[in-house]
Amino acid sequence: MKKITFIGTGYVGLVGGAGISEFGHQVTCVDIDQEKIERLNAGEIPIYEPGLKTLVKKNVNKGRLHFSANISKTIQKSDIVFIAVGTPQGSNGEANLSAVEAVAKTIGENLNGYKIVCTKSTVPIGTGKRIEEIIRSVNPMGDFDYVSNPEFLREGAAVKDFLHPDRVVIGTRTQKAIDLMGEVYRPLYINETPILSTSVETAEMIKYAANAFLSLKISYINEIANLCEFVGADVHDVTRAMGLDGRISSKFLHPGPGYGGSCFPKDTHALAATGQKYGSPLRTIEAAIKTNESQKVRMVEKLSRLMGDSFNGKTIAVLGLAFKPQTDDVREAASRVIVSRLVELGASVHAYDPIAMDNFKNHFPNIKYFDSWQDAVKSADGCIILTEWNEFRGLDLNELKDLMRFPVILDTKNILSIQGLESCGFTFDNVGRKLHQ
Ligand code: UGA
Image (cartoon, rainbow, N blue to C red; front, side, top):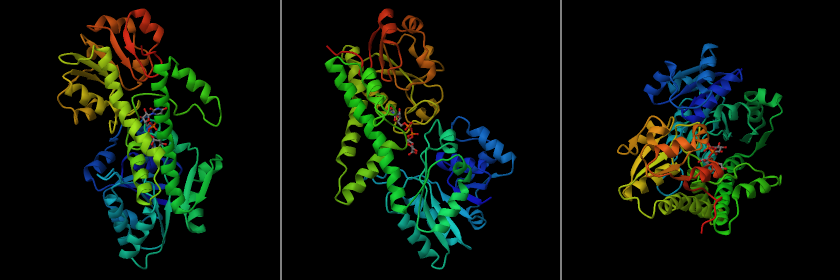
């Protein structure tokens, strides 16, 4: 059993801290936000993530998981300190590392014996070295090993992804650190999860290379879907057949309104910026970013066509605001770009999302929000689906048609049956499945 600190109680810190306590270690999650710590200590979970509350509660009750705002004391008592603070995108596309650097300084000031300092946050290649330098500058005699241990969990499936990862990457320079990290992840080792030991820089690169590749895959299939519309092909049949080739795989081949979230948009920009910095540009990633941006705008153009090229004075129902289902996160969501454009073009937006409305209200306080999809679509002139929530997959098309003023719908997630829409008499469109005349 190891004594572990997680600094930062966002997605990665909270899920990681709870997950590692589930592996049997003594974990304390710390944060500079005292109020957040108080809420966590009162049993409140600040993010919506299926299964997280149960996991936290179980491990708190077992006495293995704690929350504290006393960062210095917690670090001093730990064998391993995980850095899991945010690395938001700066104005130049590069990741903003001020939180990571501040944490490195605090760790340096509290190194009272050998510790592992391990970064879980996604940080640009070379940051590990910088963190080591900062720690050494505040504490030249400090005894520690640095580890880069990138996290691959997805929002909405975070608990499952953390407890059953495809792989664990441990980037470090010493065998002692490899062995200690091996102990942290021992239950996974027993489950035969591949545990890869690499250099720090390689581990940092793996995280970006993986996220950027998935982003590229999505932008690629979005462009194929767009072309399908012109040549009369069905992108679902195309991806089904492509995915059967094991070299391609069917995962992350779902077309849509463009990827969002706190990772892909930020990480592709950061990797592209790193490429530019070293004079080794990643042109494929730069293209994927541009494609993704234009895909969001393309959805507005599609809807505009359905609406007779004018939104002025029309009511548009927007179903789904979260960047994907099972989360209340609206960071970089396609809905942000699309709703903003619809409002600009004179539409009155009636929105519904099962759980992301409160977060969306912070950005769009002036659109109208409803407590059910039925209320949002009532008397609407058009409707757009932006998140594939299960309740939209199963919506009754006859009921939808009866509620709307005009049966016009853009299904950007391709979740509604084309046959059903046709037989109900909808004017509709989707992404990559319908011939554009
Ligand atoms: C992503 C990665 O999948 C995780 O492995 C990684 O750990 C995480 O970023 C991170 O770096 O922290 P996440 O952003 O939570 O996870 O969500 P994804 O499920 O990857 O979806 C991202 C976006 O891509 C969503 O907007 C989703 O709708 C879109 N997407 C995904 C598609 O448009 N098509 C697909 O086929 C798959």
